[in-house]
Amino acid sequence: MHDIKWIRDEPAGLIDALARRGNRSDEAKAAAEALVARLLDLDTRRRETLTKLETLLARRNAASKEIGQAKAKKDEATAQALMAEVAKLKEDVPALETEAKSIEAELNGELAAIPNAPLAEVPQGADEHDNVPKSSFGTPRTYSFTPKQHFEVGEGLGQMDFETAAKLSGARFVVNKGPLARLERALGQFFLDVHTGEHGYMEVNPPLLVNDAAMFGTAQLPKFEDDQFAAVNIREIALVATGSASSLDAYEDLISEENFQRRNPGEQDYERLGAAYNATATAAQEQIRRFKRKRWLIPTAEVPLTNLVRESILSEEELPMRLTACTPCFRAEAGAAGRDTRGMIRQHQFTKVELVSITTPEKSAEEHERMLACAEAVLKKLDLAYRVVTLCTGDMGFASQKTYDIEVWLPGQNAYREISSCSVCGDFQARRMNARYRPAEGKGPRYVHTLNGSGVAVGRALVAVLETYQQENGSVAVPDALLPYMGGLKTIEKLK
Image (tube, rainbow, N blue to C red):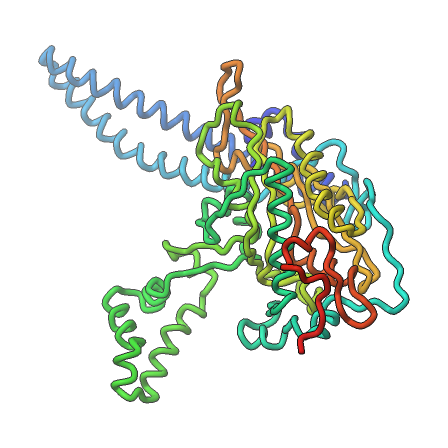
């Protein structure tokens, strides 16, 4: 989230940042100029309203004292006039307070929707085609046969089942089993062991459900609400659907398994039950915002890990703080319709090892390079060919100042695909979380800088291992680095 004082003092800075994200097109620049003008107008109105409010409050306090002084002098006429003035001021103050809060909310809403400013060295570009190669590792392997895609390998082994997953959960889910499930677990454990044992990250086991404030803090809300999964208490769904606590009781009685079975439900019961649910479906998106006990399934462990420092002031000695976690992640993939519909590349549920760093502004660039090296290290140990690209202004994420993507080579697809993104966010997330630190030299608190990266995506690593280590007979060799985690199993073969 941007500092309105910075925008007020240097409006051209935000205009240039947004124009760069729009590839410096005339439309992007015009939109940025209009947005900044709107922000500055809101800021002026907000400050003018607050000044009026402060003036009214000061006058009310002064007049209240003058009433006592007039009464002490037995000047009843002056006292009555002052009392009338105070009464009028008391009427005017709430209206100004409401106006100030309304303008503040509108300003904050506008600020929350603005992406981070790219660093000066981020390459200019419109999309992924303008990303700039940074480095590479390994050479794509050659095969004496035509390599298959991971889902063909997994299904051929009888250990990757999308059909059954669809029966359980719908599209974009998978059931892995047997040695393949163990291989997936081994990858997550291996990544954690390397990052905690060799790279100095502290392992964390965070909640998988978080509140609105946590999602706002790392900028998943409000911009990317449609890409998230929400979990809501069933009692509250019923309450919103039926509109009252009394009808909630009736609704719960209706769906009570014991009562439902005992009464031998008829068509009318089913109609009532359906009507209660349909009421939520009619305006689901609006209603979901009203659920007080709503929680969000984490799209990545970046959310809980970064928010561990929210609303706190750290000492500089505590920094850098390096955290890692291996968790399930959940994404609705609302913007990915029709993309990667087969296989494990783009799933609603996947496992990922996340890396998060909290550091000082002076160290964030150095920490970014370090985080990239940590993510690369696990791929090198698996002997997977990959390349690193610097994302251009048009392809980088909403909260990022600069992002490196690691793209692993997939022989079955004959293409490089993303397996990790490492981003430095500056103080963008810290402002949303109010996360600060106190410098060692004793100056006032400053906002921390936050970084996040995949270290790496376990599901995509499994994809890469299956495609890279596949053999002509359909089996898959276990990479040497994973042998200690596989109980002596060196080859994954078809289940008998």
